[in-house]
Length: 252
Image (cartoon, rainbow, N blue to C red; front, side, top):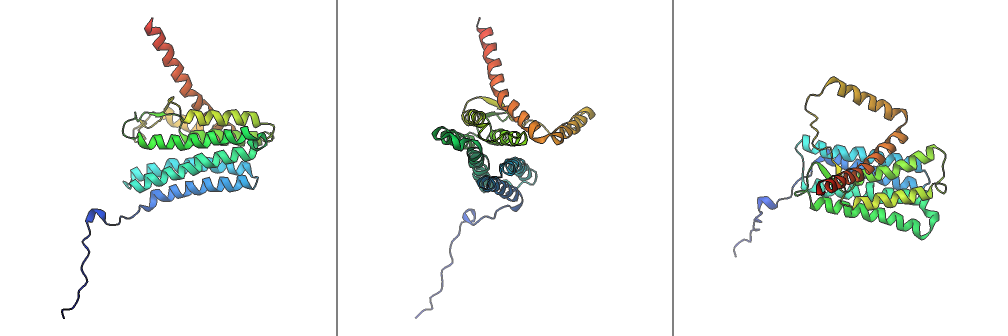
């Protein structure tokens, strides 16, 4: 009898198991943890900590993509992981935080408002992922989910800092939550800031303006950040109204 020898598996090099880049995914995991932490703190009634955690998740989410591009460690896995992390940090977490803080006592309207936000974030992320190759890189279609999350978390943070309870601010919270959810899935365009070249030299006054901005934020972070993201959310509608007015004038 001939000795039976194991056959070598014919493995296509393209189908070999690929590794996962550690550095950018560390930032994504940290952002996911911050979103999860926000949910846990909301369940424990520590809403200010929850709001701050959402802002931290937003900063970390902005870093993972830049780190991946700078280190040339972009991957399909990283893109999918980042999208799932965003759904937790900027979809589920803000909806749960605002519901537990202010909307819980509004009955059916409260959880419907929170669901509109959560569904808006999911649809916004799905649309963004399917339109990467066709959309204008200078603009986002619909309010980005991190900005919407910052808007909701900012309201919670500001109201708590000014000694407002969730019950006292529930109507403001309800309107803002629905506004953020609907705006995420709208066709309103928002400037993406992606065409800003950080490697290009800038005038000295620009550096001085950045220093002033950091000083302004550090003086009253909750109020300044909420005001900034509220202005950003309104800017899309203002730009759309301006374009509509110009078209009407040209049509005359």
